[in-house]
Amino acid sequence: MTSTSTPSLRQTICHALHECRLGTLKLVEGIDRDTLCAQPHPDFSPVGWHLGHIAFTEAYWLLEECGGQEPLFPEYRLFFTADGLPKAKRVELPSLEFILDYLAIVRSQVFQYLETAPLEQQERLWRFILQHECQHGETIALVLQLHRFEDVTTHLPIFSTTPPLPLSEIEIPAGEFSIGNDSLDAMDNERKIHRQFLDRYWIDRHPVTCAQYRQFMEAGGYHKAKWWSPKGWDWLQHNWVTQPLYWIDDPSFDNHPVCGVSWYEAEAYCNFVGKRLPTEAEWEKAASFDNGKTRTYPWGEDLPTEEKCNCNHLGKIIKNKPQTTPVDAHPENVSASGVCDLIGNVWEWTSSDFAGYDGFEFYPYSGYSQTYFDGEHKVLRGGSWITRPWAMRCSFRNWYHPHVRAILAGFRCARSE
Image (cartoon, rainbow, N blue to C red; front, side, top):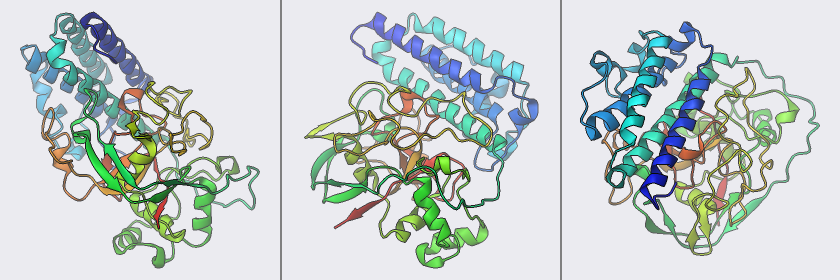
């Protein structure tokens, strides 16, 4: 999006909000009340809460804070705020029809306000609201995935009909680069741009594939403490698992990225192969650095599309079939350094704790990022196959506790000299 002229900016924002909403609504077509209200995982709120929260957040910031309007449906204010009821208490929801009406009424008034809003002063907030809906739309898709995905017993195939990709890593030379993002799209935790020096390192050309991860499983990876950190092994003893959450026992998935692993599982695999997880700075340099310049996306400046990377598939969740693609399926999804499949497909765990950069200033409220600067959350990068294009870029930072495996997360390995 550009702000070369106010009319063009209004049209662009209006179009983006409309397209984003179409994807959100498509997710809940035909949803029943049990699926709307149930909490299938303690880390995630019900689908219906996320829908209501999207409406509340848009109304609060754009209509109340900017437009000076009275609150819409004030009786639901506490219920749909992020710091209101705990997740387990968010199951007593109004009907889907009511929530959809709430979304529609808010959006109608937002579009009316957009016609006269002073975008020169508010543009960053409008971009935040767009990305906020993208993020909650992805969470809705995750919750639906949990509802629909049946955990199955793994029977490892004797052989695969898919030739495995050759193991390959890219050398990233030592030197300084610019990390972070100061654009109006940037969320508060991406700011500010700063220079950082990294020693020479090597990073895998592709994310770890199912075929590669199978070797860890076959070697007893889930049964041998030697590859696990003390915290990871303790987690495993209390959460006995033997495969990734979204594991598919199908050789046709061999060259797809492994999907549905916790940070602890990713760390254990890296130990198994004698490598480590990259830091988020190493990941970002491999993704964005281009001969002294910085790219917004690995391929350049064009917004992500389904042709460039595996993204934006909110309406394509199929029972028991995560919609990942082979890690070499999108030849344009390659950085100047030669690292592939960095954006889309699966979020990638890094070794870094989620923290603010020097000079961090919260926006638009402290609870968006700052609350999670607690040393307990790990950074993920890149986006998944359901991430919307407006919430994807090399600098975008996601964060979760290291035990969480319900997200569409994989990883790639790195090593130092």
